[in-house]
Image (cartoon, rainbow, N blue to C red; front, side, top):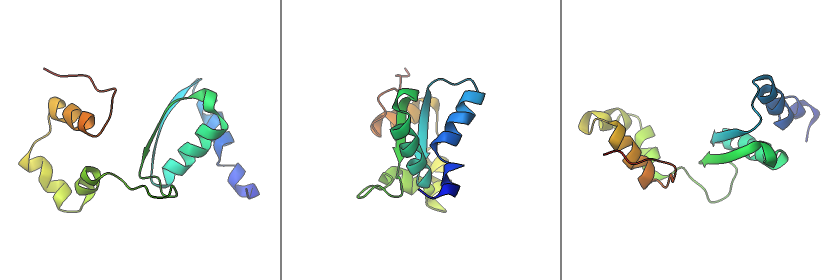
Amino acid sequence: MPEREHACGPQAHSRVFEALGLNAVVLLGHSAGGVWAIRYALTHPDRVKRLVLIGPSTVPKTRCPLPYRLIATPGLGEMLPRLAPPSPKSVLQFASFMGEGATRRVA
């Protein structure tokens, strides 16, 4: 790894987490941030409680799930909440549909 990358790599993340008093973290990485999250998790597996990746850029054969891509589509993303306004219940249902096992049920 080039010398300049060490300054902003997993060791830098560890220093930030230590300064914040965090012994273990839940990491969420999207696109290139997913690569940074993977690198941190691989070098510090004892400090990562969970790793959430959304369309990491350099993992072969992965893409952001279709519902998320639709939400991010210019025009369509702004129109969807007007057609079906989000509520706490609908957000949790969507998260559950997308495979998030930690969601709680809302009556």
